[in-house]
Length: 107
Image 1: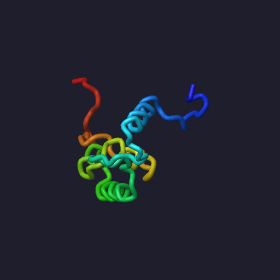
Image 2: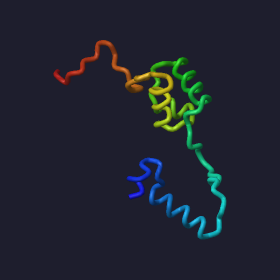
Image 3: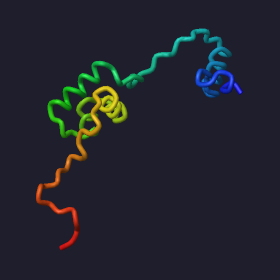
């Protein structure tokens, strides 16, 4: 019912219960509590520059390799590549088939 009235601006049921619990326990601050761990936004200008430099250094790298080298999550690296750098394909895999290799299994 609230979703109909407010659309996507409406809080989720879980978030409403969380806020109710905070106010019930006399927590009047509306600021989010500090959390440790990875930041929510991994698509910072610094990270975009980092991924761009890694790709330009050696283009045929996989997303997994870029994640390992940068410390950025797979989904964030993928979004940086596609949405920020407009790169659709970095490398299919880390294993390359030789030029004369056949794809059929016929002997």
